[in-house]
Every structure is written in C-alpha cells, then in structure tokens.
Length: 193
Image (cartoon, rainbow, N blue to C red):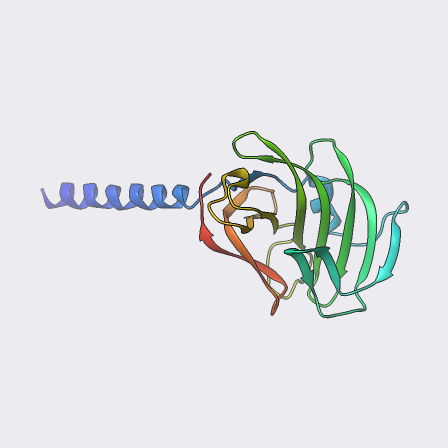
C-alpha cells in the first residue's frame, strides 16, 4: 500500500514538473528561429566576401534592440543572410565581440506574430561562439524584438524574446531585458502566447 502511494506521489510530482516546464513557454509573441546559416557563423565569426560597411565599433542595433559592448575595437559588418532559415535573405548587421566571444546580428525585417499576423520590426540576436566567457554551448543564443502594447498580443510594451540551444530549439521565452554588464539577454517574465 505505501509503495503504491509513493509511486503515485512520485508520478504526480514528475507530471506536475513536466507540465510546469512546458508552461514556462516554449513560444514567444513572435515566431522566429535563428537559421542554421546564421548559427554556423558563430563557428567562424568573420565577414563574408560580399560583406559591406566593415568597420570597428561597440554598438549594434537601434532603440531597445541595441546593445553596447563597450569595446570600440569590435569588428562590424553587414552582409546578406538567411536570418531565419526560411529562404528569405535580408541584409544583416553583425558585430563580433572578440573579448566575450559573442556574435551579434541585427536586422529590420518582416516578422510573424505567434497568432499569424505579420509585422515589420527589429530583431537582435546573440550567438555564443567557442570559448565564450559565459560558458554557453557554441551556436546557442537568444533573440529579442521590441513590441508595443498589444502588438503580437504583448501585454505590455517592451522587449520580448527567446533563448535557444545549439540545435535551434527554443528553451525559454518571455519578456526580456538586455544585461549591459555581461552583454547578454535575460528572460524576466516567462510568457506563453
């Protein structure tokens, strides 16, 4: 009898834990997944032969989807990339933070809300490269978009995004903030759309 109660209790705890993990939100307000071509750039973060606007700078992005690495010696360039792996090539600004070993990509592009509506917006992506100072898996990373209240059903205006693993699978999504101390993104409130 006690074994049955213990087994049922354990099963309940495991199911509740699995349900909580799923409810944490594997979906964000915007349907986006960093494409394989973009993720591969983290293996060799350098400008392609057709890159333009090559310079050195500390900042990438604009408005709320901007990050300042604090190092004006970072390599910056722009090149055409299939940002989301859907075959749509767009011009993408890239910044290689050689001290943190993080590749940033920024583009103004068409984005699809989780509920199907298309919007035009800015997306900032961070990809961890070899020996990144945060110890993250190579090719894993995050993305953020800035949304107005009710845009893509966002409950409040601000940054929203997702973290993903080296296979591109979503790990967590929600309201986000960029942490200027470590040039990374944090999910501050999990949301499900």
